[in-house]
Amino acid sequence: MTTTANKRHREVKEPHWIEWATGMISALIVVATIGLVGYEAWTDEDMQPEFSIAITERRPVEGGYRVAFDIANKATATAAAVIVRGEILDGGKLIEDADVTFDYVPAKSKSSGAILFSEDPGTREVRVRAIGYIDP
Image 1 (cartoon, rainbow, N blue to C red):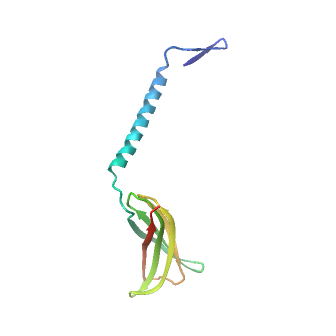
Image 2: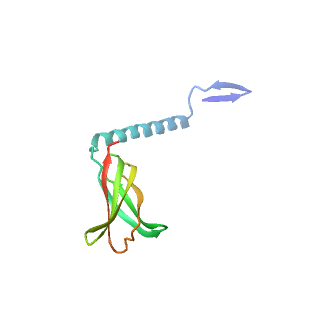
Image 3: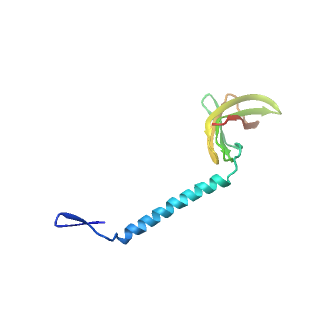
């Protein structure tokens, strides 16, 4: 620690207790962070992407109909170029389908998107599912 007196700086032999406390707390945070990262790297299984999709909204928009959804990746691996297909079915018969591609769906996270249809889904069955991805 440096003290100033009469426009001169001089070093004090013993550092202030706050310097010691700050150094110790910082060191503990660094060691805890390294330990947590190491623990997760050692114990997490390398799982392939696993998606679940939930439709969150259906509504008309200009020129068609919007079906919004959330896609969650429950695994520890990120997926790239995830293709999601939406289908409108009437009694098992395919009325319309459309695809949307997500650049990335990170591991243990959730993303949102929407598929735009020209046909009104109305009360028909709407199926939204992931149909493919690549490993980044």
